Structures are given as structure tokens and as C-alpha cells.
Length: 534
Image (cartoon, rainbow, N blue to C red; front, side, top):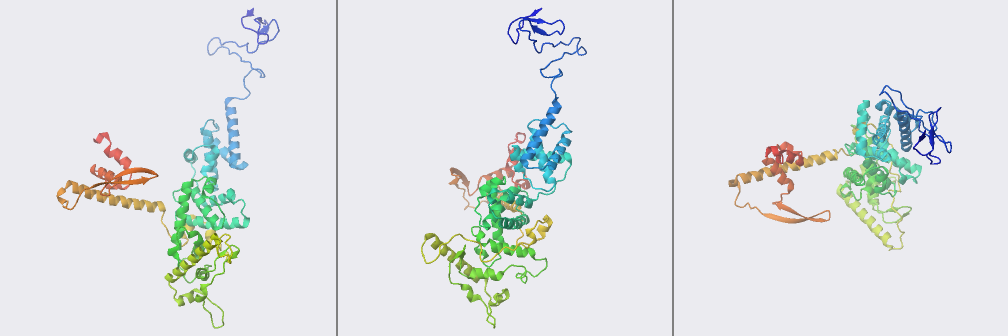
């Protein structure tokens, strides 16, 4: 019996069914037609099933089923991401075991599965107290940092883990090794930078610059500071990009670090002249002082032990009193004023010490004045070197921080990794409060003053008899420029938008304790714009 279908080979409608095999065969070319021996189910679910024959198989479909293929693809994706993150074979197996436990051996597919792999990788490294920035993991996976953070939180909760505190010092050491900006630095200078960076980083931890904040911007700030301290030209934008930190946040952390160092430098005789702009030039003295302070034990006489713990105060004063400024390998020979403050003994040898200076009774104002003159001379020499005038003197070739003497000691315990408790016990010349806490206290105090002022204004309006004849109400419009755009701000006796909001909340009987928190939008939605209260 011929079929109405055409042959797949010769396209002729000469197909007949073979009596033995039951397959369709072309009577013209003799080609057996594929996929034609399917038998429909007869008798419902319990009836006989047909067979779908595929070329190259034994008649039972694909070699792998869906579950095996899913697990194979998941294993391949895990290996690929672990290779990009630089994980070893043992660490990759640990991540694979963790994923298998979470998914109960099913693994998975979809957009969520790579995020799970990244979360398990971060947890595995963090559990071993090894640095791995979450931003770097998110960049490799190609997801948002917040989305990866939520997945990490779920993994930690499901596995009932207690991760150790993030080691920012290890994160800094890793950044020193991996940053391309420091690849050409010699090993000796890189080791010096590493120890200096550990010291400064742990000082930042003591000053709570890392409390409640993301570590990468602080790491970028310390990296830039240490690089400039060692005459390495780097840009904070480049360093922030390499450590996966925000540029604006890194600049803010760098400014906060400099401000803390300026506060420490106030104890020096010329401390009042030190600002954020010139703190880098004074940083060797400041860090030397901080290192000396950290090596002192509680209860020791700090003024007596300045010399024995390495802080050469005589050298500091000599550097400030003399007018000889060295620039690289070349120098300017200028008169040295420190000779007038040198003391000679009977044998003719010069012996200058802190006690001798105290006998001379040189006041801090005098030292500050001498240091100011020293800075003026530096500026004069710099202007001559840049303008090319006064050819009798050599031209400047780059400033070096106290090249005549190695100011860095590196013998303090703060140059080594310490526990958080040990860091807090150390004295580096400044005990600071967390910047966010100080800012919150100032904002809280400001809102309290605004609340009190608003209550007085409301009282004057509700009790006009208390207003004196001299009280007047004037409206004034002032023009303010914000972010390059002109805006008009309406002022009422110096009252801004925040004062009007506080008055509105007080009139709606909102508690003052709630207003002090500053959540104005929530309070307005709850008490003012809520239709149930209108």
C-alpha cells in the first residue's frame, strides 16, 4: 500500500510499507524512511508505549538524562569561576561540597546559580581568614554587590556558620602584592611600604575609620598615602579601580586619614602650622612620634623615654632649626641657624639633648617661629629652582623625605598584625571617636536646637501678647548657587526647609524624640499625609 508522503531522498510519492519490518520504503530508490515506526498508545495510560527511534542511538533517546546534564553543566561552571578567582583544587572542592550540601546534591541552573557559587567562594575564603573582596567576586560573576551580599547572608544562615572578623590588614597586604601600580617597585621598598601600611592601617582601625564601612576605600587611601610617602607617583583613581573601591569614597577616606594625622601632629612644637596640605612633608616626624608612642608601655615616663625608644627629638629640632634643605642628591648650601642652639661641654664636644634644650628654655612659640622661617626658606628655594634664576645654585630634582637620615624604624608591634583588642590598647598619640558617631552627635545636637527654636516660634504665634513691639516679620529672598544651577531659596528670618518641617511635625503632636532622629519623610507620611489622621 502506497503512502501519500514523498520520499526524503528522491522526493517521489512511491512509499510502500514493508510487511516484515513495518517501515516505509521508497519503491523507486529503496531508501528506508526515518522516524516512521512510531506506534500510538492504545488502551489509555496502561496501554503499550511507542518507541521514538533516533539516528545514532539504540532507540532509547539521549545518552544523558536531564539531571545528569544539569549536574555536568553546574560542575563546569563551578570550575570556570574558581579558575577566574584563582582558587586551588582543594579550595574548589570545598566550594563544590558546600554547594552540594545547600542544594542537596541537585546543584542548579539559571541566573541565581553563579551568584550562589560566588557566595560560597567568599564564605570559604572568609572562613579561613583569607582576604577576598566581595566587590572582586561580584566583578568576576557579573552581578550586583548587594545581590551577592544577600546571597552570602543566606548561605551563612543555612550552614549555621560564624564568620571571623574581616582582616583589613591582610586585605591591604594583598592589594600591595596585586596592584599594578607597584609592580616596578623594588622588593626592599615594597617590604618597607608593606610595614608602613600595616602601621597606618592599624592606626586607622584604632581611630575607627573602618568601623561600619566598606574596607576597600580605606585600603585605597592607605595605599596612596604610603606610596606618596615613598615618592611613588600614583593616582587615587587608579588605585581605587584596582581594589574595586569607589573613587569618591576613597578620596573621602584619604582626607579623613590626613585629618587624623594632623590632629596627632598638634603635639609637635610646630604642630599649629601643620595642615592637610603640608602633612605629607611632616609625616615622617609624625609617624616616628606615633611609633615611639606605640612602643611605650603603660605607666612609663613618656618624656623620659623619648630617646631610648627611637624618637630622635634632637634631630627633629635640628632639622627645623637649620636652613639647609636637601633635594634628592643635590642640595642648597644655606646658612645653618641650629648652631646657636647647640651646647658644647668643657672638652669641646657638642652634646645636644632634650634636657639641654629644657635648660635653654626654648618655648614652643619660638620653635614654631623658627619652623615657619624654615618653611619660608624652603618656599624661596623652591621658587628659585622652578624659575631658573640664581644660576649659582643647583636646580631642584625632586624632594625626598629626610634623605639625610632614615626616619622609619619599623620595630614597633604596630608594624605587625595585631588583634583588635591589642590595637585598642596601643597608644599612637590620639584616641578618636568614630567619625560617623561624631557626625551623628553633631546632627542630633543641631536638630535639638532647631526643635527648641521651632517651639519658641510656635509659642509666639499662639500667644501674640508675648511678642514685643520690636519683633518684625520680614520675608527675604536670597539667591543660592548649588551644583552649578541657580535656585531660589525662600528664607523667613533665617529659617530653612528643615525648620518648617519640624514646625509641621510639632503641630501634629509628633514626639520630639522621634523628630531628633531625623527621619522626616517617614514621619510626614505617618503623621501628616496619612489619610486616616485627616
